[in-house]
Length: 265
Image (tube, rainbow, N blue to C red):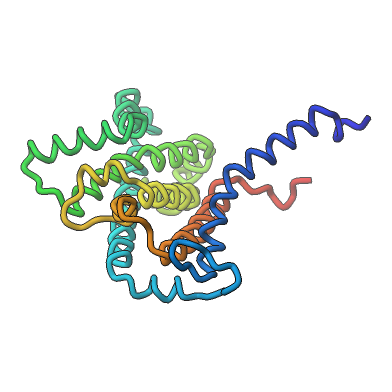
């Protein structure tokens, strides 16, 4: 029997298929439901309609929460990419304190979100900082910083030092070397880290609940709606968010997965 059709291979493929169905099939329920009329909590599969998307466009509370989430996500991406890149450059410079730096950066990401959120809440209270979107951005940045830092540092460590040495030999200054040699090599890693950071910020709930003020993000708004039940337009929102998430995953894979050279056989 060919190794391709070995019983163990078939069994592994079957288990993988079952796990994939169990994990992803629930996602298709709200997507399909968004294209049909929902009446009294029941989906009428005989009446296709886009009414859920029309209703969603007029739901001011959900759209306001979505706008807040996008603002927080974009601010978090900017802060985490800038800070993470600077910390990665510091670490790669073979300076002292690298072990302590990694411990500080990774600790909030490795701890349970409720612990990180409580620590931030206590810090803001003792520092006299009122909870607002600023505290949410700070909380998200502290949480996702490890992702950007590790992504950029990995790219730095894989970059050949001869590129920098050649730049110096040709008379370039440190700033010119960074701008024209180092930064272009880090661009894809920074873009991939930014996408992952935005995805984590978009989904973060526990830290947001603890440090948010009067304005709320979309995950927190959906969390609050669980007590009263979801309206049919939430199915449309889930479908749109899922499509947006898939797009971000594709973009992250494009930037982070190394591409083969055209000369590679």
